[in-house]
Image: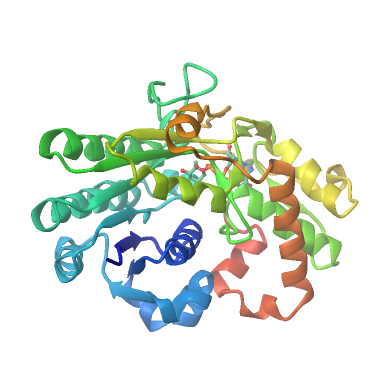
Length: 343
Ligand code: GDD
């Protein structure tokens, strides 16, 4: 029988790769989308435009329990991937209230509706390495304690515990993926990798002259989003629900990212990168690096794309986009992010 999967956040980077992956495995793929997105498909569905004929999209809001309940009541879903969230850490400092509301209540609504209507449906929660925050051990693994440093990190810790609680209290098959940073040419322009690779492309083509950036010394563990969504699926195919760290096991600074990205087009980042304190965070997570040994052993998960390959792919993709008419098709909001106007 064809398996049915529901993805919240299907229009985002991870949602689009996961939808591709599940369609490739023969799933019937459903997505929760905001009603405004359905009203402006060209603007909002850029990442899934090539899949639209194969997807079943439902309007719903993470702020409305009845809308989520209604969608879940319509189909007998086998798997539910809850990826939707306010996911930009800097924005969570600007508006902690809405980040906490959307990320915590949204997760709770989906879990509560599944418990009521589809207790056999397997549930994946998109946890984050930001939950480790000021981590007390390096590298971070499933047993490392959480010391979040932002409203975003706090919201993900709450989502993690809600997910675990539904597993323990009600016997639902609920798993937490603790994913470290994962990027791709589909990454939003406000995140540091895409901000950098899009600036490199514009500078190379003479469309911009500098990149204004924040903390060059912060260190992250970056992998390719396509590799990471395959782990989400694997987590739901296990006999028992559990939590898994997904990471590359390597850490690089933002400075190294800049050096590498500018290097792809034979430029020296020191000639173009300007540190701008406006992009510093009120509380920074200085160093993240994950240990995915459990996922490799239990899930058989493998990292395929290296950090250097990832950044090269992103720079080349942005060069192509800015060299062609594609740039005219970028949404206004994204184009605004390109100038670096948004921290
Ligand atoms: N965005 C941004 N813009 N970050 C900058 C900048 C800048 O101009 N300058 C330096 N940084 C630093 C940030 O301070 C942070 O230390 C690091 O670059 C990475 O920032 P982001 O790319 O915005 O990602 P993040 O690490 O905060 O969070 C991402 O990864 C998490 C773990 O997977 C997001 O995708 C989260 O949603 C995700 O949970």
